[in-house]
Image 1 (cartoon, rainbow, N blue to C red):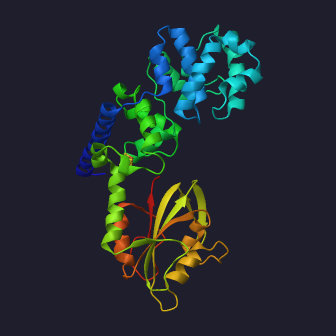
Image 2 (image 1 turned 180 degrees about the horizontal axis):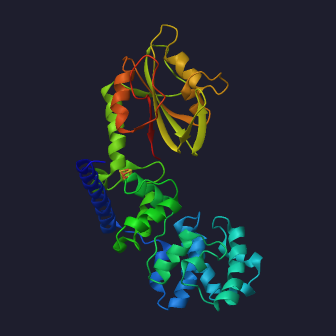
Image 3 (image 1 turned 180 degrees about the vertical axis):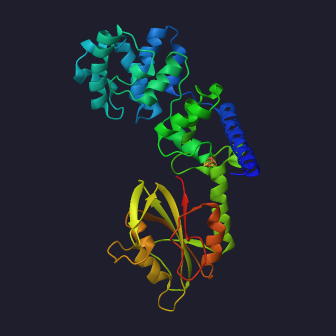
Length: 369
Ligand code: SF4
């Protein structure tokens, strides 16, 4: 890479990083809800009690609404105060106490075992090191890191699916799993954000920047600097510019035109297409641009074929559609297949999905979820 290009890449990445830090600051200013586990950590001054309660409530909080974690933790800590109490309580009683948290039967089993391990291997205390914490039943890196930050006020980065998703949407990192995100954040996130990033992004990720982002409810200041919102707006502007409208799957008009399929792939997959070309398709959204300009080979015929599962594979897109589902259909009466494809090029394009009679790089584009 030549010097100038390297400098400009560095400047670009510094700008993205500064933008991300700024978005965290805005969220911090606007945070008005304290999640249960944080609350428990603030309310308990004695470090051993705090560590025990934070550990247990974090285990309870997995796949559970915050209100439920709050109620169940309150009820449980009236009865359970030490690892010894976990050993002595019957599993059935524990199940009843923690119902209705997600996977309460499994969690009751884990908690019983946890009491024994804490007593036998850690002298009845919650260990302070991540490598010890992740050996405990029901405790992964996410829970371990949260205990380190909230119970021991030490440095850890707790990355769950919300932190992973938003850090990628805000283009601070480019990763595929929460574990990979934790490692990347450990390399580049300034330490002052380590302890708070989870609190900030989990609340926001549950309420607003959820898997299907509720951008209309987002804080205006965040929206203005959000790279993901910027991409969504650009896509919509391009569709508007070329006269596209969204149509239902069961009402495709019998007319000629151009179409854009928004395809959702729930899980990443290696897919073989064409003449044995293997490509890794990451989970997320794909935009496929096609046209049907014949008198009989029109939008209705073409799109209904895309929607059918029992077809003979002919185009490369058929191979992707076998694994993904058509989430939205946009159509335009204009013959604009290549124009739209060229403008959508700001997204990642997937090679090999162009039309045989054009020189576009591709007609298939990827958007991270
Ligand atoms: S604008 Fe949308 S994508 Fe961006 S942070 Fe807000 S909700 Fe998330």
